[in-house]
Image (cartoon, rainbow, N blue to C red):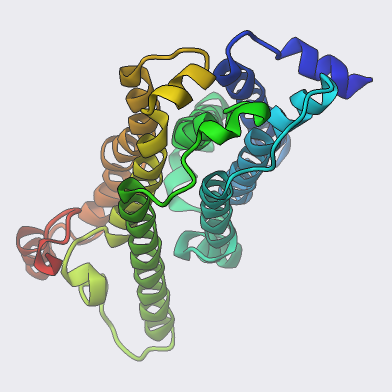
Length: 310
């Protein structure tokens, strides 16, 4: 059977690698399956499906990483345990984030309404450059999900090594996730409401400085970084335990920490150095850079961390 052949091709001696490789194949495969026609066949190239494709891929990766070890156990005729509460919670948190990201963000609603995203305008005349964005999204998905993939990679016959009790890292991690996603939702709702009010000519403000945008200039990005930090924290709390390290093929604690840290570290890099804040800030500077009120807002409002809240 094709499924058995696929399981065999990705059945490495390391349970961790056996989970990472198929997930990476799906991540890159889905991005290219949508990105290539969106870039080279659409006239003009479109980014309309970029965010929703990324969100759906996140769900696919979370589900695949959760059930792949169980399919391997079943194919080998081995007994298997159902997913643990923590595996389900981590995977469910990704699905919750993806559902909101797919249809609930300000950027998604704007692209559905206007048909384009200004971040991609410079790339449309250079299709290879646009494909780099699709490739970067595949990499980002994998790095974001590494902690979840690693926890889910614990073989189905060995899930008893995962602690059943709620740990301090679970409380901190899932607490950060809840705070981050709520913070991001509020920021997107405030931005959408502000834009709708401006279109209805209820105000004539050119840029938003109220609500969460009064405590930091990019509250949605702060929420995004916080929620992935939370999931990484919850995952790290179990990945660094000796029985779990052994079940994953004998990896070292520092390697487990690196797997967990890769998620918030890469998210922070993308949003603060590459495609998030830099692109938005350049656009705002071009439009409003000569305005004193804009310069005052930049001077007096933290870029990312909402100091006034803490």
